[in-house]
Amino acid sequence: MSRICELTGKGRQVGHNVSHANNKTKRTFLPNLQNVTLMSDTLGRSIRLRVSTHGLRSVEHVGGLDNWLLKASDDDLSLRARRLKREVRKAAAPAEKAAA
Image (tube, rainbow, N blue to C red; front, side, top):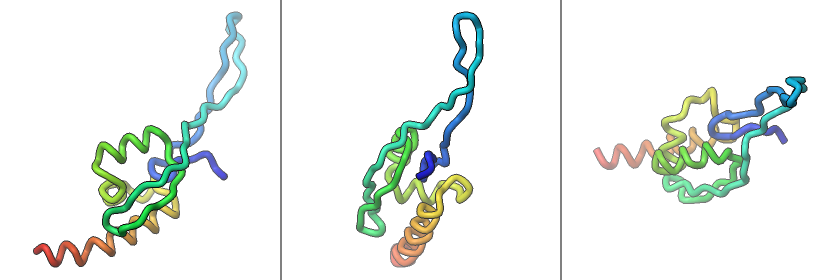
């Protein structure tokens, strides 16, 4: 399983451990990924995703999973998230026509 956030695309970064003697050795910085269950209001069901804590805070700030998916670019989203975005957009279209 890759260590990449499914919503933000945040992945591992590389850098150095620097000793007191200024010796540098390679190391990796991994994102804080959590397995979370997010509720989709439009689809009326819950979805399990592997999301970074930064991404989770962003989703809550925007107002939920559906709003996040509709505003996010497809480049950052995983394949599962892109399929989910397509489902949300398809389910939201009849609701928008009924409101208009």
